[in-house]
Length: 232
Image (cartoon, rainbow, N blue to C red; front, side, top):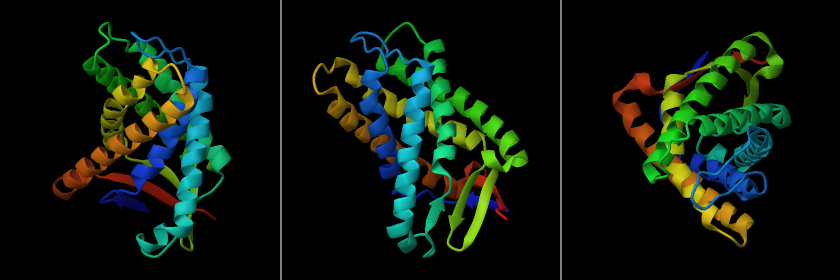
């Protein structure tokens, strides 16, 4: 079954905000922050941050599914199963992002170069992760994201690639310059990271949602879609 996303809910901004807030708050303790250079992020720290951040996002989605979502998604609650297992995908994704950010390290440390580095790293990482996910999830159920929506259960075996690549790249290009402000913070870095990450996540997501919803009306081919199989 093909599930097409005609519009994204703005509630998603708060979920992503929680993801970014937590990961950026931990970032100063697992990365090297030089005031005049991009943040040096070891890929292995991405495994930890991505796992924790994805787990936080999934738990937030499940909680919203219990209380808020029934009022706006056809009256049916949403729950994602096996959050500990699904979060591994988040860890692998962020590890790749950190790896490619070190490769796309443009000489001039300006806002424009930071945005370009963010977009290139996210585009490459997203392509790789989606390609691997689609190959693995279709063959082995354990690797698929499983969920319950109302009384129906399913697993995502394939998803659109290019729309996701474009929109997550735009998201990161907007968010990363804000996140890297944490380089200049000397005290209360955890709280500063929590604030900067939350603001960056909420702002970038809101802009992407607005752009997606406007574009989706005129260009149906730009819509995100998922191929879902029943979870027996």
